[in-house]
Amino acid sequence: MFPPSERSTSKPIILFSSGPTSYELVRYLGSTSSGEMLLARRRYSEVLGSSVIIKRLQEPSDAVARSRLLEEVKLTIQFNHPCITQVFLVRMHEGSPHVVMEHVDGSSLESLLNLAAMRREPLSEEFAAYVAGEVADALVHAHMLSDAEGRPLGIIHRDVSPRNIHIGTQGHVKLTNFAVAYSKMDGRMSTVGPLLKGDIAYSSPEYLLLHPLDARSDLFSLGVVLLEMVTGQHLLDLPEVEEAMHEAGDPNTVQASLESEEQSWVPASQMAMRMERFRPEHLERATQALSAAMKAIITRALQRDPSVRYPSAMEMRDELWAFLGGQGRCYGHREAQREIARIRGDAMRRGSGAEIPEEDLPGDEPGGGSQ
Image (cartoon, rainbow, N blue to C red; front, top):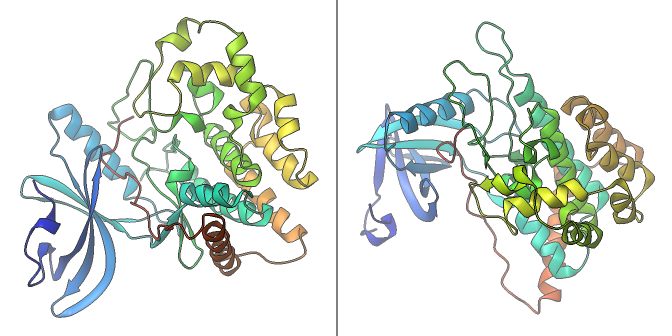
């Protein structure tokens, strides 16, 4: 399989059709761990429609991989929420699965955090509360989904991280990539053992301990993201946490057994050691410059014991929304759009005119992992 950009572009390249709709290639975006990403445009006869992302997946190597892919697609296609990227269509074409997804024209939160680092100033508390509140609202929808018989699906995203949160050019927030989500969907195939999925730098303590998970694990991950937005610091990269990890000696048996499916900035064993040695006083020092209300939200979300965290994404969402209301002004997508423009402008001035990317490669969607 070769990049479509190497082919002639003298006339439109139609990737495939589904009923009256054809999908015309716009450009090749690049490769991910499980396939190729294409930007395409819907075409209805001679009329061009909206842009979409098409992920051309590698053909499953065996029956197990095929079952996992089918399971992931069945899960993600059920979501119907404005803050979750939508999967429109899954189609086999030329022997490979093609997933047609919503195109989010904008930037990942990961990119915005990099820009904030360039300008040497964290994101505002209002912007952070807005983004985290929208993600929490998306998690409310995912966590509460049920099957056709009304049985809860027990969905846990397991990879709530800055690279999987996108902010569109109009300021709208989207949570992406449920490819490594856990669920109780009929026929699900469990992955057992110490192989961790997603970006483990944002994992909950219970996940790094190989303990059972519930929806509150996602809330801890969102708390880590929120802390990073408003302080510019990552929970497990705080100097006190790193120092405590180095003083601890060698990893224990469970920590030494851990492996991460995706590479992070330290090995999985060290990430687990840092998490084990994270203490409330470390968080207290990291958040001392924040408002009392924001500090309270982050502190509750980052409780080591799940029973002391927010009991649900709905409660965390409501506190984030109340925080914005308590600031005496409404903060929504238009305000977020203006703040992103300021962040980019500040970063460019600080970076002496360094080129700032306008768009990120979309997140890894169905086919990126398994349960």
